[in-house]
Length: 430
Ligand code: IMP
Image (cartoon, rainbow, N blue to C red):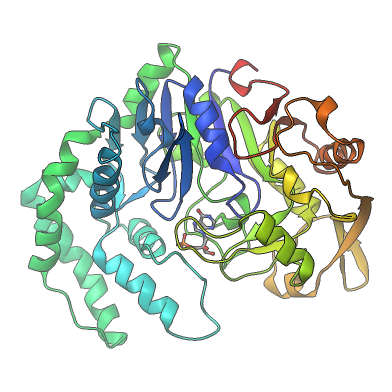
């Protein structure tokens, strides 16, 4: 399996940055296949910290090709801002190191505005989005009226595309009591940035096929997590893309047989940002302990994350849906010092024990986690690089998780430092 697909197996923020950084060093090509600049992670390379939202992790490493696939929604202005910021840190980004799929749908200012208007409006319907315009941009893509990156290179047809888009948005804006937008306004917004984008455009499906045939190692970098998937997540409190491993193929144009090893990044406890169900949430001193010790604040929005116990039901479901071959278990050290740990192993629904997370929001409200209790450990796991350096109870906790979710730990991360990792198998060598 020469290629690796990395996905989050919970609600995002599982600590993908460090793992993706480690894997991107071994990869030749790094591909984003869904989401947009709602993602956020910090990479630390040679002691320098880089914050990435839209760009694939490969951009901060010399000699890698980074690819933004068609499954991404691409904000051209956010791209330019991120590029300028990284260039200020000495990172060189050019069409030699980055390619953008010509069929990628764009995020425009009207999408950002609409996202914010909806989020600020009716109480009770709030999703808690990142307000980056992600949802409205995907809506236009599915509605077959999106402006796509290739349209920037075709000024003659761009006007037609914008007219078509505004024929949908202006009535919607009128209904929301917002001023209408003139065609020229959107054209100016796009034309002002077109020259900065068009040199990067490519037939990514062909490029990836060539790279695959040449034997290059391809890393597919998923954003968000399985429970934020538009189909498989806690709908409607989800993001607007498919975040699961299957999307690596559709969102890049490389067929699914090339996907390779699916690595599920999994936090040793659970967090989520934004609204929505969270069965094992601990809105108490345990949650506070996890949040403080784990520095659980969003990279993109700075919001405090909700925290709770590890939920084996959800991760078991994610293992099945993604076809996860192995887990990268992160932040085990955050649990150091707790007397007792709980793991949700099933739920009770209307007096019955169930071993899955129900799709119905009404049922989701009624479920109660059934916990198994495990003894905690006093010694630290932070910085461990061998199983023998871990307290016996910590090893027991990890082994129990493997058993409950039905996937082995491929990699165990014991601190934000790169080398503080116990590697069981190299996913690229599997
Ligand atoms: P959107 O993706 O901005 O539409 O937000 C939809 C939901 O996904 C909200 O609950 C966000 O908090 C969540 N979300 C989006 N991106 C991320 C991420 O990278 N990490 C964690 N949660 C995210």
